[in-house]
Length: 356
Image (spheres, one colour):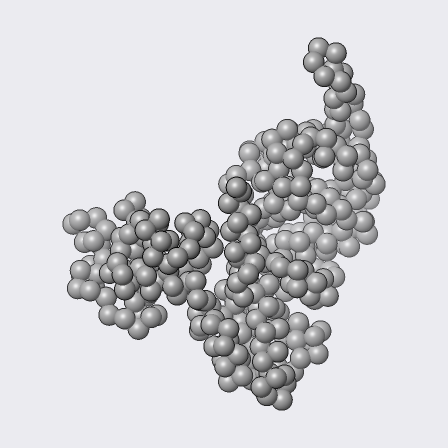
């Protein structure tokens, strides 16, 4: 079993999951900005990418290969489409898991048009033979196609038209250095600030023809985990609530009531997140506790807790990963309104962690 696929499916089922489901994909297509001027947030990335694209257009050349890294839902696919639009080129979209053999990649590369943008999502999950073929394609715009097997096999060089590869990855550390070095421009996508998400929500509300007050947008933004995809998903659910339970206008009170129904709290934690924290605090006194034990207590798979729930809890400073196991922070006790045991409050938990 591929645990990446399992955790992706678990994340997609959550209202605050950052993996896109089919509904997200359909809505995102309508909400996506069409150029860098419309793209909200990621100011440094936008500025740097704008220079790269302007320079390429001035030279009449294809743009350098681009690597975009960062968590799901931050706009990597959107930026790839903007790159193609800014260069006036068509775009081909595929993903690393779909390329399991070098022949799969050769078929895609050989059909590219000159200047075309090839977007390769989750590039770190591509097979090693295809990865090695990609080295030559990116650098020399050439691939060697092997015909035959055994001693009689022959390598036939195939020239490729100049193209731009846009690679996207959620795990840049898994990319081998030879592949990373072949990208002319590398950018890391950061999580959004609440003010930026408010702008995203207002823009999306306008496109969806939803009435929303500033304090309503602020309430949704504060629960969106710094991710535009989650902000848009929460906006749609709050819109549904406002249409059924109110007059369609999204206010702060309406947003709070709607998100309470969907069990998304003020910091963006959902049922799974709170379940992990409650088990850690109530059953194990704040830890340390092993991951497998914690997963059993929550009733979830080990990988679901580690890959789906923990990253946000760690980023929010509610949970710490230590050599001895998972440990709750003082902020976790405060968030759930619980009082930590005396051993936790002495020295902020250092005595429990290191035995000092």
